[in-house]
Image 1: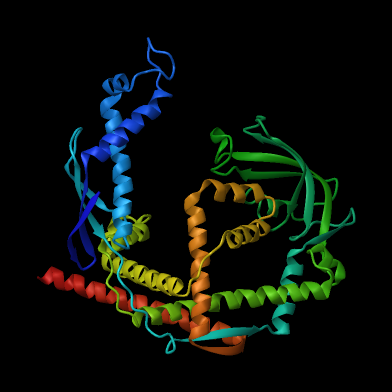
Image 2: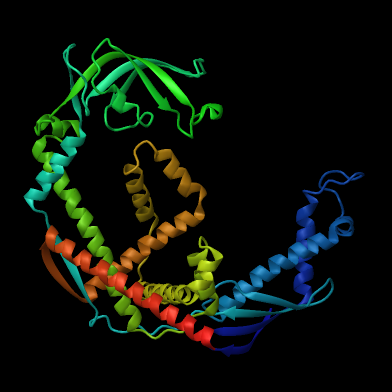
Amino acid sequence: MKVRINSKKGLKTSLSVLVDKKTIQKKMDEKLIELQNKVELKGFRPGKVPPQVIKNQFGKAIYGEVIDGILRETSAKAIEDNKIKVAGQPKIDLKTFGEGKDLDYTMELDTLPDIKLKSLEKIQGTNYEIEVENELVENRLKEIAKNQQNFSDKKKEEKSNLGDLVVFDYKAKVEEKDFEGNEGKNIQLVLGKDLFIKGFDEQLVGVKINQNKSVSVKLPENFPKKELANKKANFNCKIINIKKTIETKLDDELGKKLGAKDLNDLKSLIKKQIKNQYQNTLETITKKKILEQIEKSHEVDLPENLIEQETKIITQNLKKEDVEKNKNEHIKLARSRIKTGLILNEIGLKNNLKVNEAEIQSEIQKQIKSMPGQEKMVMEYYQKNQNALASLRGALYEEKVIELIKTKIKLQKKTINTKEAEEILKKISEDSKNSKSSSVKKQQKKTKIRKKK
């Protein structure tokens, strides 16, 4: 194999590769011998078909397969030998090929840029530590208790009220006729939630145990029997029992019911959950600000093909008019992602960061624990989906790089309470809205200028 660099301009490199016909013929002969043990032809014993007969019968297909293999092998070696960092798939153009001829082809390559890493010492970030107020924990506990509804039986002479649980049997008719599925036993409704059929609950307010109550409602549009949808139905209800809500006590039993050891343990879990919610959000914001600073501090040439690919990913679920309308914004975002990714990758390479198999399996186990009952589904997802596994590896690698960066920048540690955290998040949200509004106005201004032209 002979390789020649035709040109090298910016992030594009052109190579010429020549594979002599003797090498190709050797590969052909090896393939024919390999096929002897596989091909079965009438008139020949298995494994005894002469190579020439196989060639006469399947020559073109065999040659095509051999050439494909040679192209993959020689192009990879040419790239490796010349230490070219390829961005995307090379474009191959066959100049000369055919049985009994040399294989001559060119490769057009988009290459990754050489990145000169800047010092990270001037990069700034804030590592927030959240203090959760006891008042917030108590309020969250009360909300949880409120949603843990408990009921006790009402006396026979007591009437039902909104919020009560009514247990009843029913038989329904439409136009005085029975229909499939028109009976129900021991139906339970909390009055006021309107979870059965719209308007049904309110007609059960004021009933007593053992009372028969006629309820008239219009069946919903999505009723299983389409021919009955939107028709008036009469339900003859027999009230079996009525229960009133009782206040849930904030005690150790509530803690145990919700998976904690006792009430204090439940409060600790609630506090930890609130803390994590704020901390995770603020960490994401800190990471975004750090990456923005790193991106601005580096000058990097970007391969156009990677920008095109990333733009397609960003816009793949958008409508055509939205893609065209915000084309510049999508390209800008794609460029930012590619540039940041290349810089992070270079930092990782320079510091010999790697993600090993144990770390990947550990992360998969974390996901499994967070999805009880779906362990098999999660495992099969990663076993059968190599793209998902690669994405997971990429996310873990980026996380490692970010943690390394944090050790090299000016990272201020700041302890704040949840109210201060809310103010920070509110300001970021307002800044984001103002930024988007400004961007829209600029785009509208450009559109007006085009129209005038």
